[in-house]
Amino acid sequence: MMMWSNFFMQEESRRRGAAGRRRAHEQQGLELTPEHEGKVKLALLLATVGATLAVLSVGTEFWVELNTYKANGSAVCDAAHLGLWKVCTKRLWQADVPAGRETCGPAELPGEANCSYFKFFTTGENAHIFQRTTKKEVNLAAAVIAVLGLAVMALGCLCIIMVLSKGADFLLRVGAVCFGLSGLLLLVSLEVFRHSVRALMQRVNPEPPPAPPLTYEYSWSLGCGVGASLILLLGGGCFLGLTLPSRPWESLCPKRGHQAT
Image (cartoon, rainbow, N blue to C red; front, side, top):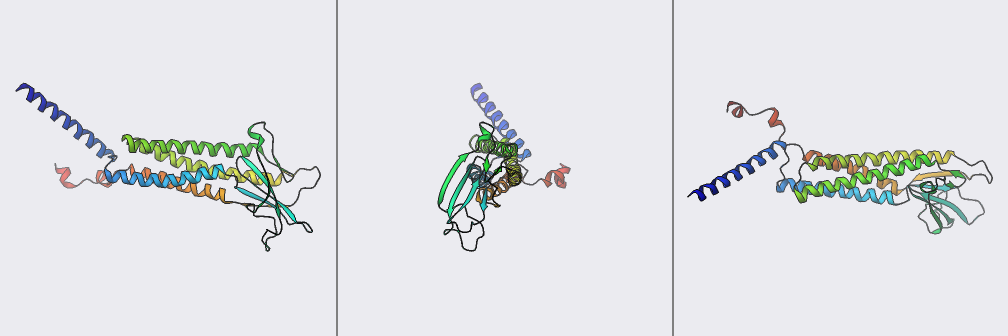
């Protein structure tokens, strides 16, 4: 008889402990119900799209295109495109350039390409592009901020995976902060890169031959970075919204029946 009474007492204490934990989760608004889990997965899918665009943007070198004007009497013209890590100069056939275009390009046209990584990551040397010199401090800052943004984004992905696999609900807020911060860091990196492009256009080498007139236009890699930043910010906002109670006004305006009891 004592054995059965001990069993029922243990079962009752276990049930009360589970009910207490469930009430604590409900008070915090972080109970991972099947519906809540589905919303987390949808937000993670949105954040994954932003993460893919971010990696594509940072890893490619089509952030900006530099175009010389078409040279009269020549069958070729020069263009270049660069990103955070390397620059590619191209010699294009003017016959391939659209007829209504005054400058050489776009850089995606087939031609003789010469790509090289920036040396200011290794030896600290500036790069020279069409008789213009990069400002390595600004370029380095843009690259470091972008890598930091990718690292924070990876940490956010890890937090959300832990929420779905281990039920660590408290990491949902951490993941929301990580995704929002990564979006902000990417936006800062894009703005710093814009300043580096402006500095490049102004730093003309005084030595001959004279620097050719240039125009520049931002390309699809930078567009991917802008889209990734906005999507990551939206994903972080979605995760943050999922951490809030489903009916937050009930705690502020309780029902009269609850007050009476």
